[in-house]
Structures are given as structure tokens and as C-alpha cells.
Image (cartoon, rainbow, N blue to C red; front, top):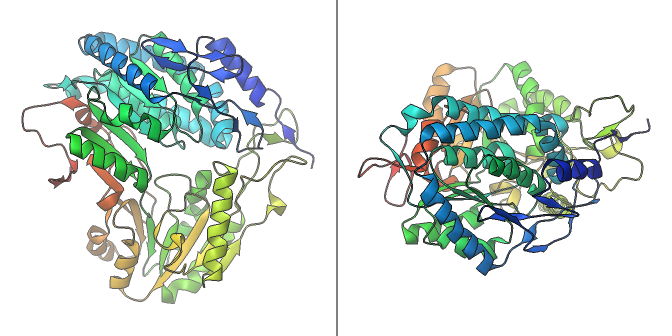
Length: 511
């Protein structure tokens, strides 16, 4: 079957539409930075390629340290004005921004496909989730802000590349609705055009948004340590998060730091294998490049044969390929479980980790093949990793204790409940976990001992939307928890002596 990119969905098509929709933010072959309420062609554009097929796309225009410092200073001026804008007007402007995002949701999703490799269905869901989530706050913000005031300075947002809309844009719009000016750093690995278009639509409605590009090391002085910043919101890995945590703790700065953890799925005294088989493909959405992905299964040894009978058929049916490849121009983009990982370097790193783990004793139970994948003739596939499942990764392997952030599953076998809990708590805290067991009493007894913020009974847990809270235990989270009213509380000031729920050096308080 000969495949081709669906007409009208090529990167060049998306770029031309960006130039038409927001000419102030896009110029010729580059995106621009937004600060002091003006789009600027400063910064050194870096070359970038799409993970989808290795073709060139727009790269981030990296600013230097001094320009970033000036931009943050200008954002403080915006903040001092915006915090006095009446709530009714803030609501109206945020609502108008949501209307504009809705009008251009398919273009935003198409940019996500090319920039970070999301399949079309998931890319569109990311955009719509951001819009719907913020509308919930617009509709119900009054009681959340009762007795509260904006921060003394703007909120600085540093987030990973995997959910530019439903995590980063969502947070930025709620922060602005609460009365704060906002700074957002574009992720280094992708999403710059999508974020630029979203911020252009917000800026047109008068929201006090600053959008900057640059390396973390170059911009951290301005985005984390600058005295103008009222709160730091970070989503990313533990190594970078630890450096940010040290800085904000030293400065006594308000912070929300969402960090990775090894989310685990336990199997203990289970018989409902049909339900488990049905959920396995969903766990591979976007190639497990999610903070709430489940890359580790902890399985009762005497159930291992039944586990494999339920797990392997589902994994063998996963759909991988080019997110926009169609056989007929009239076809919709294909229904895929995932496309590429974020770049070819990540693909090589994952492949090397798997090879090293096997060399040191891990048992390969499944290796996906490119034979059934949907690729274009001659397509660059260097950023694609096909599903891999390993039994008992050795302790010396990163796959034993860290989140792979890719379509690699590992399985650990246990014989006792104590071993089950120890294996599920291997990474000193996680965001989510799940325990599949037939017995309600067993779940009720074991779940509180699993060090994850959310624990599901046979079903996956997610970051959540609207009034659902989110956080992490152990090293997976530092600072205030978010979600629902807690997101607003994290970026506003309340009564003197208020202690927000979260993980702080001096206390831990669960909501």
C-alpha cells in the first residue's frame, strides 16, 4: 500500500497558515519572542527537525541572559498593572482567548504533530483538553478567588515538550485569570510554533503573556532566580528539577515542581484478565512519553503465565507510524497508538539502554517490528522506537529505577506482598500507580502503602482536569499541589500563615 502525507497537512502548509493567522509572531522562516507586549526578532534561531520524518522545521530563537533579564523586568511592569484589572474583565479576555484557540484548534494540533510527533487524535485532544479545562475555571473562578489576591510578581513557567497545550498553555491562562502576568519558556526539544501561535492569540486579547526561548542554563538566572518572579512552575525531570528546587528553596520563592517518577502497575491475585488486556494499548498512548505513563509492571510470580497471555496479544497489535500518512487523499489521518519519540537522539538512547539491559541479563519478552508500521516510501524513521518488553532489568540499568519516557516496558516478578510494595516504590515516590487485584480488602490494605499521589484499582490514573487534584509523593514533586482550586491557591496569596497542600522542605501536607 503506497502512502503519502495527507494533502493540506504538510509542515509547509501549517507554516503558511501560521503566517496568515499571526503575522506578528511569525516572520518568513522563524518564530519570534514576545516580551514587553511586543513581538521581537531577537535571539539566535537554531536549526530543528521534525521527529516525524527528519525534515527541517522552525527552531527556537534563543535569547541571551541579559535580554531574558530585561524581558522579566518588563513582565513585572505588566504584572503590576494586570493585578488591578477587575476580575470580570480578566474573565472576558481569557474567554475570548479560548474562543480564538477553538477557532484555530486544528492548526494548533497540526503543529503538535510535526513538532513533537503526536498522532492526530492525541494532538487534537491535547488542544481541546486545554480549552475545556480553562473554561471550567472561567465559569467557576469567583469562589476560588474569594479572599485571595494575585502574587507580588509574575509566574515563571518552565515545562517539558510533551504537553504544550493541556499543561503549559492551560497553566498560563489560569494564572492570568487569577490576576498574574506570566512568563513561559518554550521547551528546548519542541513545540515552539504551537506555543507561539497560542501566545499570539492570547496577546491579541490583552493577556500579559511573555514567551521566551533559550537554554535552561542561560535563562535560569532570569526565570528562576530573578527577584521579580513571584512563583516558579516547573514540569520536567528530576535532575533539572533538583537544581530548580535548590534555587527556589534558597530564595524562599513560591514553587510548583512536577518531576518524574517510575509509575508502576502491580498485579496481585487477579483473575479479570480481559479488563487488563483492554487497557494495555491505552497505556502506550503517545509512546509512553507522559509523566503519568506506566512503564513498570510488578507481577505476582505465580500469575506470570496468565499475565503474558493477556499482555502480549495487546502489545503485538499496537499501531505505529507516520501520523499523517494516508492511502487516499480523502482519508482521515490514521488511528495510531504512537508515532516517533521526540527525536533521533532519544530513540538511540532508548535502543542503547535496551541493548545494555539485555547484555546484562534482562530477558526480552517482546520486540516490535517496523514490518507492520505505516511509513512513507524512503521515510527517515530514525526517531521511531518500536515497543519493547523486558523481564527483570538488572539493577545497573537505568531501566531498573528510572522512567524511560518511551515505549519500553519492564516487568519485575515478586512472591510476597512486601516484595510487591518494595518494587512498586522503587523510585522514591511517583505521580500515579495502579494495583490490579480482585479483592477490595486487599486493595484497601495495600494502596495506602504505595508511594504515589494517585492509586487506581485496576484502572490507570492521569494528571486530571477541572476539579481533580494532582501532585506527587517523594522525589516526584516539590512545592504546592495543583488541580481544581489548588491551582488557583498555588498562584495567589491567601490569609497570613496559610500553608498550601504540597511537599515543602519544612512540611508535607496532603489535601
